[in-house]
Image (cartoon, rainbow, N blue to C red; front, side, top):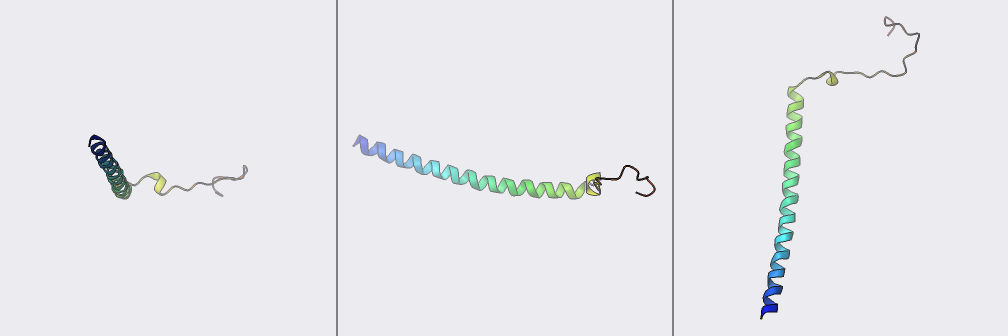
Amino acid sequence: MEKNNDLYLGDIMIYFNIGGIIISIIYSVIMMRNMIRLHVNLDKEKVTPSDYAVVVRNIPIDMSPEKL
């Protein structure tokens, strides 16, 4: 009788472990969506130079600022 009880408790532990993993995955997905939404809202509210910056490379050495 004791061996059957141990097997039954082992089965219950497996189901709890699987349930915990599933809950953790769902929670991670929800938190990731919330973090992305928060990032987008904060990015819209704050204007930084990187929003309007232009990177220019390989400018000739003899180029004057007026020509540029």
